[in-house]
Image (cartoon, rainbow, N blue to C red):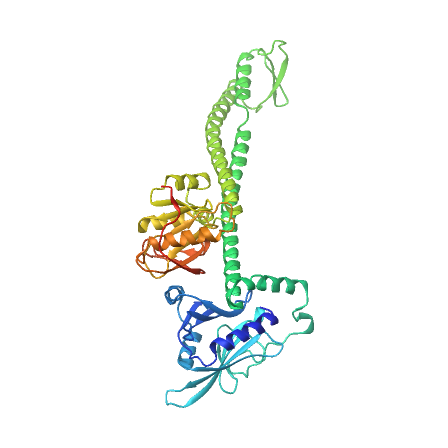
Amino acid sequence: MNLETLEKICGELNDALVGQKFGKIFPLSRLQLTIDFRLHDSRYLFISSEPNAPRIYLVKRRVRDLEKLAGHSTPFILLLRKRLANAVLETIEQIEGERVLRFDFSAESEIGAREKYSLVAQLTGRSANVFLLDKNQYVLDSIRETFGDGQETGTRYAAPTRSEDKKPKESGEKAREQRRGEFEKAGEFESLSESLDVFYLEKDAENRFQALAKSAENKLKQETVKREKLVRKLQQDLANHGDAERWKKSGDLILANLADAVRLDGKILVVDYFDENVPTVEIEADENDALTVAAEKFFRRYTKARNAAAEISKRLAIVNEELDRLREKKARLDEAIAETDESIVAEFTDEKPEKAAGKQRDRHAETFSGARRFASSDGFEILVGKASKDNDFLTFRIAKSGDLWMHAADYPGSHVVIRNPNRQEIPPKTLLEAAQITAFYSQAREQPKVAVHYTPKKFVNKPKGASAGLVSLSSFKTILVEPKIESKLVD
């Protein structure tokens, strides 16, 4: 985050959090945490000290989703809970000219005395960190270990120093590009925090997909290289055995010339009766071998080369078939990567052979009987899952990452997917009709108005060990609709 972005975020945080009490902490990863300040609109403070993307803003999440994502508490998290539980946030301040925010708290100790603490979010690239400071601004602990003046436990906190040549050039083209990326969607959302949340969720999803795609490509490449190496080895083995017919002919010629053969410097001169011109040819052989022994050796070489050629040819055919299949997989993988279809790409990384992909996936969609099919007024196909297992299959086997996924908020019901193969912008009327269908096929059908969550399918995840139909959303929007069906039922 740059200074301009952080300044605006500081204003948002002041408006939303000052005066609120410090609540539950959700450690999302070793360097990421979310703090509940008990706001009534399901917003939480998100802080990331990941060196490659340090950031801070408010996120809107369901508490049960945060609980599922929360990992084990580190000593730093435990210390925050101990010192800041129910502490009142008094001020939020940005250190001038630095990408550092300081949150000042007033807490009550175990004996009822008031204590002052500060939580510092240091969003400075490689030195990014989160510190807990005492009333004298000494570092009590940090989320990760960093070094330097004012950065170590037991020292008085100071923002990290840097030489002039290493200062971030906020006016440079790279900084301008970053600002454009962070602000480009700001007009579409109610706050900068919401815009940043979506921006980084999409960025994380893209990075995750690129890593997944790279892993899949490397796995296929390794398999391909291994078989290509085997082909070269088999071809070399075949060449080393020589031409079987040549060895047979040499043995036959020696036997045919037993009476007339001439030996000269390790060679046997014989008449080639297989050639119409009957020329004299040379055959290399061990000069210590009798002619019959030399002929027998050629016949053995013939038998060995003939058998090897047959066996190696079979193996080459098998390996070449495997290479053809790998090339077909590579073509399917390239297509899935071009379509940003994460579920298909993931199948390649799991090494599941002959998994449905591309056209096979489309055939699954055509033959899938576990969904009702509707056509919106704008011509978009809307699929509605019938049972829990059908919901899972629809979401994770049929829907592609660019399709729009829907579900009634806080009520059991069908998963609904708006198919979007051409990645168009979903028209508002189609969005409304699909949301109404979603509300209708839920247990909130009798309600006058129902909240429906919707999000691109790529933000829908399956928690490990979750029952059929249960998913978690990393990002979503909500629309309020009346449960009814206005779209045409196709199937």
